[in-house]
Length: 252
Image (cartoon, rainbow, N blue to C red; front, side, top):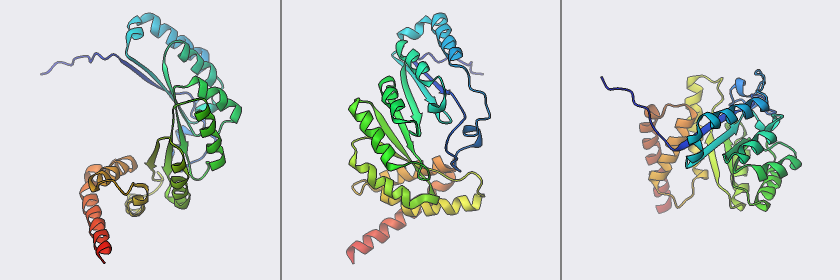
């Protein structure tokens, strides 16, 4: 029998879910990440934890990478968010904040200065373009690293397509994240996948190869349901058929 061996790494990576409260009620988000059912850990507790962690494990100071990802819920609702990020910065941690961007402008003026990377999630049902334009302006003015995750909600598909076009004007990374409402049956999920596959083409640059398109769709399905191995052969046939139809139409 093979022995279990520890894996030595010089990378330090922790994800902190500082709150499970959220001001949005997206259908595709688990209730336990939005209903505020858990009492948040006090910021003093986090600070004590990391202080003792570094003290008891001084080798962490020599690690090449020291990442802390802060998420929720909506982390900007956490009362000690700025104090926590400031402490992590002072101790040379690379901080990433995952947020829906709904906090007031004055809060973001400070947060962009404290975080090393900010990932803003755009939820078509709730997010507003003027608000995101404001956030992008603040981030770019402060030379902050940022990216946008566009939630591809099939119930607000026109809004998704509008967002795809809107964010093209900015020179920042935009990722497209497929979603399926968790209350739906398996059959309705499969129907929704086919619907998404029929529309996802608009989000793929035309100069990409067919292989890249298939990989992109594979990742989408994996994100949607985890049924990659089951669905991927169907995807290949589906994509191939679409390519043949497109080629035929171009010839005509």
